[in-house]
Length: 107
Image 1: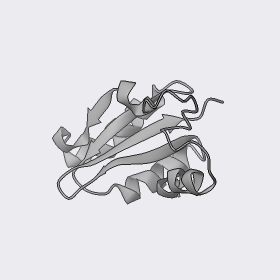
Image 2 (image 1 turned 90 degrees about the vertical axis):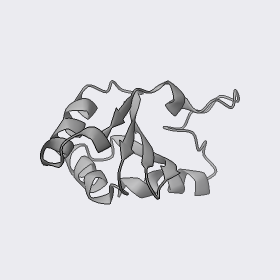
Image 3 (image 1 turned 30 degrees about the vertical axis):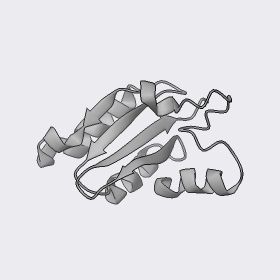
């Protein structure tokens, strides 16, 4: 599942930055990504809105998602729609807000 991809990269000794930002500048790649605050989107259209936003993400790009809970079901749906295409990095782990960087593979 997507939520474990960033953890596996860390364990494998690969760069832990969002999407494997490999230079030595120390900058987290997710800092330049646009933020989508899902907390303000009505629940009935929340996932569809996030999928629409992810459709626009170019290879090597990403977005930061703010969610009111750990979005594990959403991550599963993303992996079903785009198998292996998005890496996930948890930037904040609740308890009020979860911030996740979703980065599309560079192709």
